[in-house]
Every structure is written in structure tokens, then in C-alpha cells.
Length: 320
Ligand code: ADP
Image (spheres, rainbow, N blue to C red):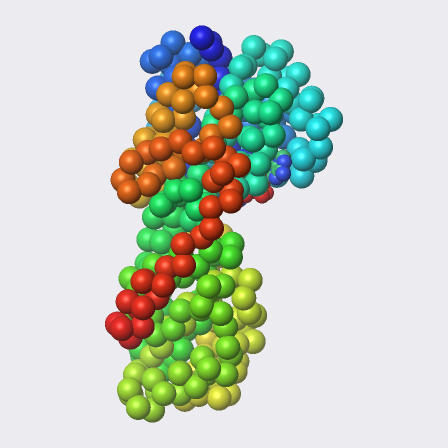
């Protein structure tokens, strides 16, 4: 039976990571485990930046965005020699298993560590909803709320000025944040890696909204890394009746107090991660599928294809 586990947050942070850490530590303590916080992701693991989590660390963190353990990227963690140093540090502290909260990169680190004898369970902490083994990642709901709040405000001012707001949202090649926010905000156009981007087609559609549908404003939501939204907004001004304005929401989407849904999801996933480790299971990631929290082997999870979301795109097209 294991006695000591570690918990860390890695990669891009997301609201709700604190709630997940708290659940791991509280459930772990209740099950008689000593739970150690590993600071700044795999970097802190290699550096031995590790400390026992007490009730003091965990009070007042549930509603706080970010991660009190800090997060970092350590590309060198792909090298076995670097991971060996991490394993030595864990052994020095007597830590036998680790919960890793992060995105798919962090999952790969967790799988690699498990192969070296440290059982790891990964929890999906990312606003991008780009982990295919779970219906929802921790932070997605909060980021969606942030985007909807911002776009609602942009719509007010766009309306007054016959403007087209071109809004870039995050997603890391996953269109969910754009698609869900587009439906929730009543956007005119959504562009994601999945829909593809034909600039002429979008400009023509905007002309049509202006002339035939007599819209006073238009909202175009575009996933990041698809086009330069500033330059596209200039083309909107040039080629359509709207005045185009670009807004890049950027890191504001990563912050804020987690929504109740994200807090509950994080708590459920933290609990499941500890339960799996107590059963002696490693190399799995926790996900929510059809309302149930499940464990899936990481290697399998990383190969699950993304759902097409054709149904949601069709719905959007019927609502415009
Ligand atoms: P995210 O977890 O948000 O996807 P990254 O892709 O930056 O963020 O990954 C976070 C960290 O996970 C990396 O900085 C690195 O330390 C570790 N990592 C990523 N890929 C691997 C890999 N193939 N093997 C071992 N560790 C990895």
C-alpha cells in the first residue's frame, strides 16, 4: 500500500487547477496518504522543489484561478537522463506515485514516468478542451464564460457603430471554445481548424449579412493560429459595409475564478485520481464520459480522434 504521493500542475494553467489539487490532497489525506505539492511542474520535480501539503495550503484555494503550485514547461523532461533526476528526487522524499494536472504534453511526461516505476495519473487541466478522452477539461467552462462575457460586451458597442468584431479565441487547434462561444453569443460566423478558413467566402458572407439581412453588426469568432485577425479586420473594412475591428482575447481566457461546474469537475477528477493510485494503477488519465468519471490508459487516450462536432456546426448554421 502506498503512503506518499505527489501532485503537480504542468503546461498552460487553467481555472480549476487549484480545486483539483485540493481534492487530491483532501481525499488523499482522508485515505491516510501524505500528499506532497511539487512546485512548477516537472521542473520542481527535477529540482526537488517539493513540500508536504497541509490544511493551510488548501484553505481558500477552491475559488481561486491559476494554480498555487505554479506551472512551468521543461522541454528537457523528454530526455531520460532528466527524468532519472526527477525519479531520484521523488525517491529522496519517499514519493511513490504522482497526480499530474495538465494538458496532453503533461500526459506524455506522466506516461514516461510511469514506465520508470512511478505510477502517475493525469488529470485534464486546460481551457482548450483539446483532450479527446474526456468530454470536458477543467477550465473549459470558465474560459467559455469569459469569452461569452467579452463577446456580449463587444456586441453592444458593435451594434452602435455598424461594426464587425473579429474575435480571436484560444483552443490550440481544437475549435470547441470558438464553436461553443459562437453558439452561446449568436455569432454570425465561426472559423475553426475544423471548419477551415476561406477568406473570400467569409468576406462574401459578411457582405450578404450587411446588404440582404440588414444586420447592424456582425461577430466573427476565429480560433487562434488560423489567420492574422488584425489584417483580416482591415479587409472587412475594405471589402464589406462593416467597419472591421479585431480583438484578441488572449490570456484573459486563462484567468478568473473557476465556475461551479469546473470546481465540481476538478473535485471529482481529483478524487478519482487518488482512488486509482490507491488501487495500484498508474499510466492512466481521468476523464468524464457521458457524466461518469473514468480512467483511460494515457497511451490510448492520446490516440483517440477528435469528435467532428458536425452536429453543433449544423446547429449553428441553422441558427444564424
Ligand atoms: P500541456 O501539458 O499544457 O500540453 P506542454 O505541451 O508544454 O503543455 O507540456 C508540458 C510539459 O510536459 C513539457 O514542458 C514537458 O516538461 C512535459 N512533456 C511534454 N511532452 C513530453 C514527452 N513526450 N515526454 C516527457 N515529457 C513531456
